[in-house]
Image (cartoon, rainbow, N blue to C red; front, side):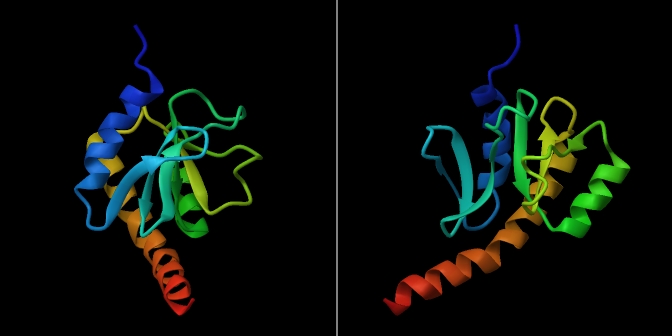
Amino acid sequence: MMKSSSDAFANVKAIALALPDVESGTKYDGSPVLRVGGAFMAGLAKDGSAEPHTLVVRIGLDERHALLEDAPEVYYLTEYYQPHPVVLVRLSKIDHDALRDLLAVARRRTLPKARRGRLTSCAH
């Protein structure tokens, strides 16, 4: 029996919540998402172009390029996600340590957006 996307995301969530300032929530469509200071960090890919059980993770474009080159069996991209600073991750192909490292990078990439959001909301 194939794990559901929610089950697959449970491991991601456990790893991510061990990082400082990471919060779990849901998107407008009810799918699980991880945020830092309210800014998107990672979540399940819901666009039809993505494979089932795929995680979408915020990452820098240089880092994304390196991941796609180094491990195309784990990381990929579709046209829909191309313009965004994210990478798609096949949850069935990534090991625990690589996932932990990727989520730590995503958290660092998300922090500046979270800080800008807090500064903007404090100014009103």
